[in-house]
Image 1 (tube, rainbow, N blue to C red):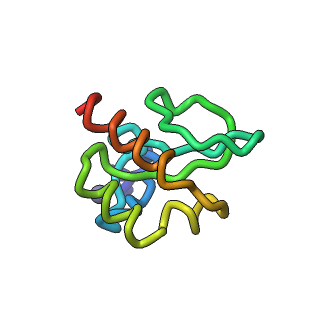
Image 2: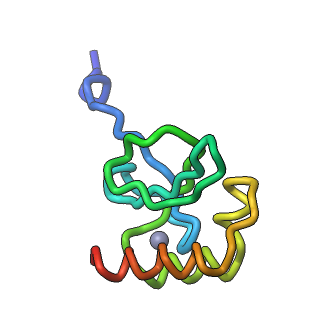
Length: 94
Ligand SMILES: [Zn+2]
């Protein structure tokens, strides 16, 4: 019997909206739209709401911002000042 692969744990992966690569969820940064419409960075991955994923780097964030993929993914319009705040937070974190 060849079952060597069957006991491998499946790691949940998400696609980065910047570089389009699939990576383990915990390596990515979650941008969440809260039920009240607030958009923020979720560094813990535990906030409830609709989430979009990007790598924890500013290049991917900027790409995702420019291409409007975050907004499309979250199905909402994100004001420039919110984007600026998220970007500042990401720079501070990294
Ligand atoms: Zn990326």
